[in-house]
Figure 1 (cartoon, rainbow, N blue to C red):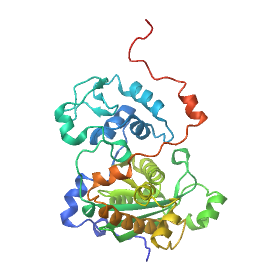
Figure 2: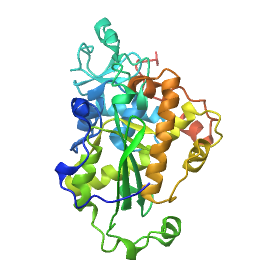
Figure 3: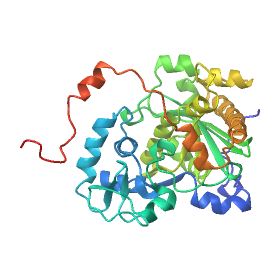
Figure 4: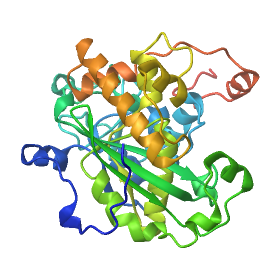
Length: 353
């Protein structure tokens, strides 16, 4: 596989989806949108595509990945309960009151109307990241996948860590059709332990473009595609934070984690690291812990798992995301879990009498 950068191209020279898929790219896939200025605005944007459970919603709104269910329920009630534009369904999911046929309730527990249930947006069946499926969604064969890998100076994008290298492998119909790879000047030192892992030194990135210089191309390559990564929340948070810092805009749209995909489609694997998944499929990683090598290997693993999904009868996006985000085995309760349960949810009725 030959890796290359595309900084010399004009926007018109980028590989766009085939003409038949351009409408799909406009209505489905990743979009870069202005960052909402309030938490309620973020919640409204998250709910624009359908109801979400409190845990998923609050993790998206507050960008707190370690949030637990009971705390998320309290936060959602405190944040959204007094706003008339949000309703809480009988299932516990939150929705926009302005959604088609949504129950006209005011921040209270409300049962969805028959029309709302018939629309397929009932919250009893969860889609990706806890969303109630809206419809079948596009066919997997029609989707463009943007497989992303980033190397960084650390693990906290909101704490000052930055991207040192980014790669985006474009996949259509299971095949890698294009690869963009670029070293990035992080505008801060690279810790020695990161250099020992990635082999990326300050001398390598010192004269490379800073992220704002490649932000336009990154946006174009993600636009209208499903964002895919191995441990997708990590790469999503870094790319979104870099775009926010550079352009005031952030990522919004569907994403797919190949770690979760492997768990659902290759259950015989005892571990789902990129090394284990690629070894299972006989895929060689040309350069481990470098963005292009990891992105291409992840893209090839994605193609193999999409073939497995089709053999299991999963032919559209909604079927795939429901399968990938299906019920998980319950983990053992920890001391921290027991402490959190000592803080009860707000009472819905007076029980002191």
